[in-house]
View (cartoon, rainbow, N blue to C red):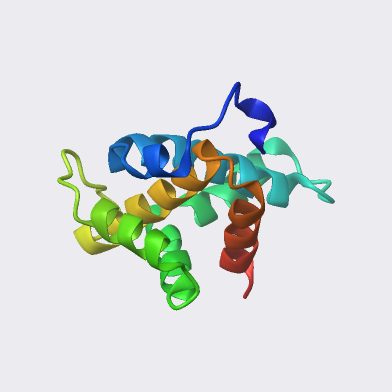
Length: 133
């Protein structure tokens, strides 16, 4: 996934970025991952693929993924998740509770952090773990 980056940030620099900015990047990373999962091996049309992917990228689903990862995250990752979850929200989701929205933002921030710091293997591991049933 780091093929999209011109360069990566040092881990400590990435950790210090605004959690909302990390979530902005993490949202794109997660969206591409989910769309790839839905698309690969499917013969469905794009409208159907879109409906399938929306079910996984919505705040409630991302909140559940973060719950599944509890106990698996490193201390540093837990610190980032906690900081992102406690960040002030300007426009919460209309389709999710505030708690679910904050947890989904924290999950996206984690993905963004791993992506911009070039931790590709850990990012893949987190994404795959989140998708396990």
